[in-house]
Length: 583
Image (tube, rainbow, N blue to C red; front, side, top):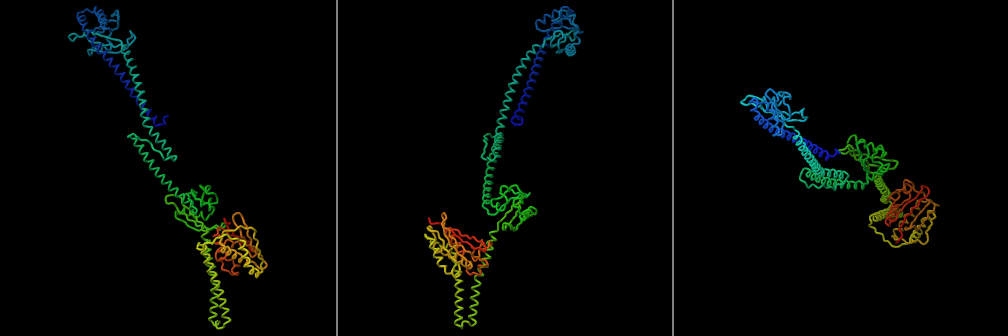
């Protein structure tokens, strides 16, 4: 209970109020008791002096025997005990005793001693004779300055006790009521004071849970109201800051998610604290499982981890290329330390495709150079020979000019095919689509190239399923694809081999395939056979520009289809492509 500030403050106020009321009650009780005693003392002093005045003639006249009668008469009149004492302490008369001579000598009584010394004296003590407290007041009897006796008047304090009991009861009841009201007021004031603090505490807990849409009512103009208004301003600022942080975090999350490069945030102990989706390409485990693990456990590559360790040690950016031979991957790694943190950011870029494209570019230039070098060298040789005198020999000159025309035609064909390929790739050569029958196109191409196959000693067979649906295609372009594929099969199939041209419908597409029993294609060359100018070593001896398969690939893809090849080296190859059926 006392862990609450409300109870601590209220209890402190309650204790203070009780102490104050108890102290005030004690003081009032003391004050009234002494007030009544002082009033009674004054009254008894006046009565003692009157008794003294009445006793003086008897004492000075030697009529002491009548003093007892006087004492009893005066005692009855003032309703008090009256005692007349000689100067030597002998009791001469007493209103309560029948025989004053039998009473003890009163010279040792405190009030008598003070009266003889000071003129008046008083004392409060328990009367052994009567059994209760009495107040005794004595006044000296001294006519003409000569002390002849002492007059004493006394009253019991029972009346004062009764009056004080009543007063104390009133004071106690008033104190209890005041204490109760004071305690209730203390609790109420404490509740009013603490309630806004409790609301602040509750709202603070809500904000700690992430609910920032909080505001506390602060109508008062005191310190608690100022605290509430300051809290509202703080909550608004915090909400604004959290909104900015959340927006920034969301933007960063979108950037990280959309990045194609793997991102790792690593702390000072080399533990992964955050990754993006692209990191799964590098990780040896799901990205969620990598959080909290050491970096080396996540990437399983010591070269990448060594770059990270150097970055953490030197606090400098580290870069490097890492080749993963098992996956034929080339990775670019950049480890950058954080400025105000012990960790660092690791960026891993997959450069495999870039390296492949760079290789393709080099091969393209090499192949193009090779394709151009042969006809140009032939033209140069033929021209030099003509210049050296062969031009004067008509038959030889005609033969050389014919050979030069062949080389020029070859160059023209290469330029034409390169132009066609460029236009197809850029979309500058739109397709002239119309419903076409693939069986008619295949039959026409096979008939056109049958003589060439016969010269090569090859058997060519056309196997077209009956009732094939028509396709929406550019008839000329599809014919060009088939010519390129069949011509390619003729070139690379040795005499005695066979070429099969088939076509069939499958769901929503038409599948056309050209199979041969030729030399086949090695597994290393398979991924690249559709690149422009790419030729395996066997292909270089077979002539051609090296653009036929590249053109076929782009024509098929322009129609919305796909082209591929299956081959085992030495066991032939099958080129197939698909064309969507006409709607």
